[in-house]
Each structure stands twice: as structure tokens, then as C-alpha cells.
Length: 477
Image 1 (tube, rainbow, N blue to C red):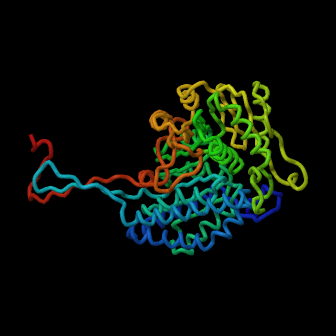
Image 2 (image 1 turned 45 degrees about the vertical axis):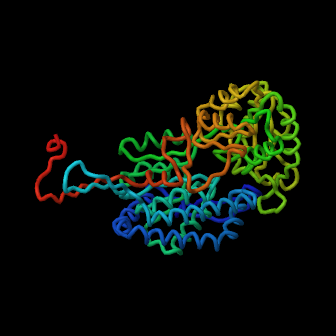
Image 3 (image 1 turned 60 degrees about the vertical axis):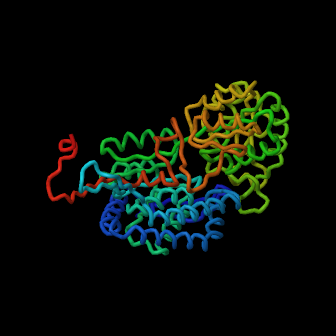
């Protein structure tokens, strides 16, 4: 009997559907099918590949409401955020569709007469894409859209918590005209299906979004076959609030970045570094806002914060509340599992704010991935920069200030792949690179032109029309 995975709603435990669970043999079959499809897909002209992505974007627009509703139920996001998740996939698909008519290389003058030089991008083969549950439509699009327009085929292993959304994503690609076999989907756990995909010798590229610890394991497993590995890992992002800040704007940015998606974003702002002159007032306003936020199912219009993804997640988040208290931080609000009424059926955690946090505390250093914000007081801008940079991650950063000189210093000196001025740490536009420094990844980027570098290799081409053998540097001395 075929093993299955059950999809349940984190909001109330309802069973939403089942999908087949892939074992190592099923993963191997998916890779074999994608490898066979690659031989024809790579020869489809890139503009035609782009046209399929354009149609896919249109299909996603048509299905946006249905996908949004499914996401509120399967992943738990509130309506506005779920709709934004789908919109990112629409935007990415339109953007990468345009790359089908670009995919630029370079031409350069030769150092020899009667010789032409150019470089072109070529696809690599089968891409193994392992995606998380927190952006179950957007992140697959970040990986699949550039991979496909470049001429690769894909085996997608989505998170076991959101299989129905991933299944629908692949079905809609087929509806848009993607040939059979070009994208395969395998459902399962990281230790089984994911590991089998990473190890398979016919998968030359692995693109993975998830935890730092799993990213290290992926790198080690891929090393024996010298695979291309693209990693998007954790974050411990900070918002700096200086003394000249519009405090109401800063609070809005903190609430959105710290509590949006219940804090389950790699770009979430789990640290707020505030100047002593505004620290007390900021603290008071933030607590007041947090305590007014309504917890509930994502599909209800008046919900501010939905559930976290599963029991393991809520237990981890709550464990960090104990850690923070034990370390001496002051719990201002939240810090508890919500169990009143219908909330007891799901995995809800009250928005949590700690004050008097030392930058060296674990709650200020480790990724919690929940609705927990730590307030850190500083005396000046230089101290704020040092604390913001004093972590092992380097994904997103933000500063609220009206001082243009300090804003430009922050743009230069914050050690992160993303910096926001007078906005929170979350949000991205598809035409700019997305990714981080230090332990957040391995130097690659998603989105924008940078994504093409993950899914292509460069080929340099020399055309000699001199009619004789020219030996480059040897004949050029």
C-alpha cells in the first residue's frame, strides 16, 4: 500500500487532504523523468519558455483567490499575507518570462584579428528544489521560474506541512502549457525524500531554503558529487530606531516585521535596537499595539495573527520565552500559548515583547521563528550598528531615521544582503537580488538577474574566421 502524507490545518486541525509520500525509489523515478524531459526542454527557444511562464502568471492571477483561501487553511497566513504570497509568484513569473527574451551574455573584442568572442548562458540539467512551508507559493516560484526559463527541468520537494499548495502550483504550470515531465513533484520528509533528491547523481543543482543546520547537511551530502548548491537559510534581523525617528512609523514597521506571518519569516524583525532617548516611549507603544492584535484563523477578515505551523514550532517558540526569562530579560507582554475558545484547536502564540535584553542573550542571537521581539537599548548610532552586526546571520536589516548621513552610513556598514531605510525588514521586489551574507547562505541570490547565475553555467565561445591557426597569447607577443 502506498504511503501517504496528510495535510492538516494549523488553525483548527481539520484534515484538508492527502498526497502520496515518496520513498527513495519514487524520487529516483521523478529524477529519471525530469532528466529525459531535459533533452527536449533545453532545445525549446528561450522566448517560448518565457511565454509559458507568462501564461502561468495569468493562470495564477485567475486562481489567486482560491490559492489565497487554501493558504489561509493549509499554512495559516491571514488573507492579506496569503494574497501577497500568491502575488509574489505572479510577479516573479512575469519577470522571468521577460528573461526568455534576454538571458544576456557578453560580446568582447578579440585581441587577435578576424576573431569574434562571446559568452552565453547554458542550462545545467535537473534542478532539485527543496522549499519551505512559510511561503508555499512564492518561494517555489523564486526557484522554478528562473530554473525553467533558463532551460532546466525540476524535481520539486515541497515542505510536508503544505503539500496541497505545492501540488496545485505544479498542476497550474501544466495548465499553462509546460510540457509533461519538465517539473516533477515528490512529497515527503527532508530525511527521506529530501535526502534522496540531494544525493541523486543526476541532479547537478540543489536549491534549498530552510534552516542553517539543514543547509549544512545539504552541503555535505552534495559535496561528493560536486553539485551546485544554492542555500537560503536563517536570519536574526534587527530594526534600528534612532532618536529622530517618526515613532509611529517605526512601530508600524516593527509590528509588521516582527508579528507578520506570526514571525515565521527569515526576514522577520526579532530584534529592535532603540536609542535610549526613545526607548521607553517605543516600548510603551509597541506593547499597546501587540496587545490589541487579534489571534484567529487566517480566513477570518478581522484576524491580525494566524497560527504557527505546527506543534513542534509552538513548543520551540515557547521554550525561548523561558530562555529569555531565565536570562534576565523582562517579559512585557505575551509569552504564552493561546488556548481560549476555538484557539485551543490550533497552534496560536500571543505576540511577545521582551525588554531589557542584552545583545548577547540567546533570544537576541538565535532564530526563534515566532512572534517574539526583543528590545535592546543603545546609547548611540555606532553602538546600534555594532549590535545589529553582532550575529552570525546577515539577511535583512532596517533603520528608522531622518538623518541622511546616518542612513547612508547604515547602507554602507550594515552587514546584510538587504537594508531598508524607514521601513521594516520584510518584503522584497522580484527584480532585485534576495539573499544574505554570513551564515544566511552561501553567496548566491534569488530573484532579479542574480537568480540566473544559480541556474546556468557560462560558456565562452571563440569564432576564428582568419583562415589560419591563431594561438592567442602565443601569437600576440
